[in-house]
Image (cartoon, rainbow, N blue to C red; front, side, top):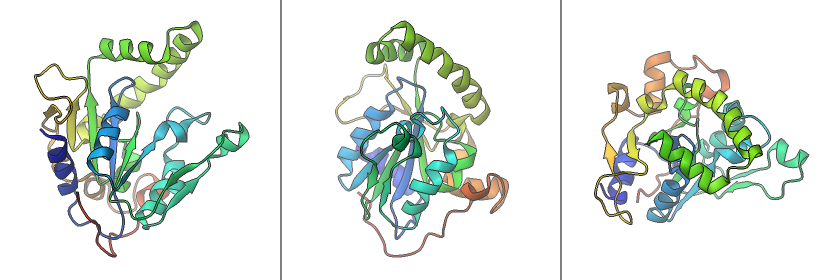
Length: 238
């Protein structure tokens, strides 16, 4: 599938979005290629932006950041507003800058391990799971981040939280689209993706609608289950 066709499929998973950007999650284990895919999608849709959940989780928590993401990023986006968010940990540890997203974007690509989860389902319009070989992903992580004793300890501690979290949430079963990363099927790496069908019939409708069907409006995770309505002026697609 071409990258442009992938964008169209993700757009069509939530066809009635107006007055705000489409919010698309990109999930997968470390080393799966989430950031690379997000960058390719942003290049395909110039009027789009990337949110890295690692910036939300930084010196905060491996996975307990859903409410922070909703309150400070996803809620303003759903209201058609710009985002300029400086997390508490950034202030505490003197990290410069902030997480900024201008108003008027067509797509927001939210990439990071753990973003496709029950808690965030009402706030996501479509999602991608990056599927890959675990040994290959570990090799890529070591090549990217090194294999010092400190890094290996960090990876081990991360894995202790990551595996139970993914086993519980099963993001691949919620995803609108599954993308191979890295794929072993012949394709043009500059213009194409290798895509598999969704693993569950639940993926046939957008995560936000799925959340309403499976839990009922307002049930489940409290504030994170109550996005504003989809109304307002229309936005371009691609």
